[in-house]
Image 1 (tube, rainbow, N blue to C red):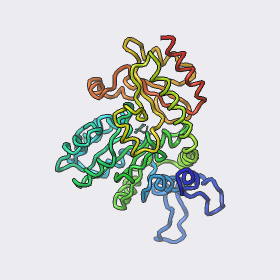
Image 2 (cartoon, rainbow, N blue to C red):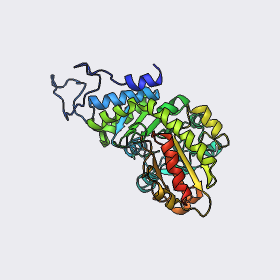
Image 3 (cartoon, protein in one colour):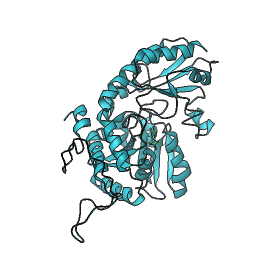
Image 4 (cartoon, helix red, strand yellow):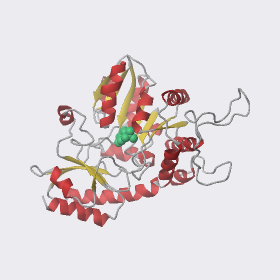
Length: 379
Ligand SMILES: *Cc1c(COP(=O)(O)O)cnc(C)c1O
C-alpha cells in the first residue's frame, strides 16, 4: 500500500463488531472479562483501548515500525521515551530542539540524574565526538524548529549504531508523509500529533513508534505505568485528521513554495530559511531524506524593521503558537514558542529576537500573499 492509501485505510479501517468504516469511539474505561484469570484482549482502558489501538496501528504502519503508542501530548510521548533510561545515562541532544523539549530536559530530566550534551546536529562529526561511555541515545529533530536546520538521519544513526547508542527522531515537522526516520536507521520516532497529523488545531496529542521489539515492550510498559495516554475521543479525532494528511500536505507544499518565492524576492525581507532553497545549508541532505521540504518557512526582516509591527499588521494570518494546522499561523519564536530558552542560548543558536516563523496553511495562495504584502508594505 502506498502512503496516501495507507493514510486512509491503515489501522483498523473497519470495526469488526459492526462494519463501521470509521473506527468507533469506545468510551469504556473497563471491559467485561468472561473468564477469570484469562488473557482478555481488552481489560482496562489505560492499558489498551480499541479506538486508541486503531490509531496506534496506523502510525506504526505509516512510520514503518512494529508498534505505535499514543500519548496525551507530544511532550508526554517524549517523556515516555526518555523514561526508558535511568539516572546517570547520558544523551546527545540537538541544539535547536523544540523549546518544551529543552525545558523537559533542563528542568525535569536533569533532576532525575540524566546528563545531556547539546550539539549542532548539522555536524555529524560533532555528534560522534560528544558520545561518552555512558551515552544511551542521540535525540534530534530535522528539520528543526524554528531554524529548519537539517540533520543527516542516516549518517547519525550509523554513528549511533557503531557506538551501541539509540537514535530518537522527533519527526513532527516532516510528518511520515515526507520523512520516515526508521527507514533511515533511527530506533524511535516521536511526534507532536498536535501539529500536522491532527492538522486542524483542535487536538493535543503525541505519538511514538519503534521498529525494535524490545523497545516496543518497554514503551508499552511505560505508557501503561506512567499513564499519560490519549483518550478515545482524541484518538478518534487524530485518526480522522491523519486520513487527509496527504491531501493537506500537497496544498501546504504548494502554498509554502509560493510564499518562499515571494519572500526571497521581497526587498524588505533580509533572509529566508527554507530547506527547499537550493542555497540553504542542508538542502542536499533534505532532498535525499525527505519527499518534500515541508511548509514551515522562517524569515528575518531587514534591520530596523519591527517583527512585532509586522505580525500585528497581519489581518488573515493568525498570530499564534503551534503549527501544522490548515490555517496559516505566524509567530515570533523569541517571544512565544522559544521564550523559555535563556536569551544568550537562543542567540548563540541563531534564534534572533526578530526571527519570524510562518506555518503556511492551505488557504488560497493569493489571499496569503496579499496579507503578507500589505503587512510588509505598512512597515
Ligand atoms: C509542539 C512540539 C512538541 C511538543 O508537543 P505537544 O503536543 O505540544 O506536547 C514537540 N516537538 C516539536 C517539534 C513540536 O513542534
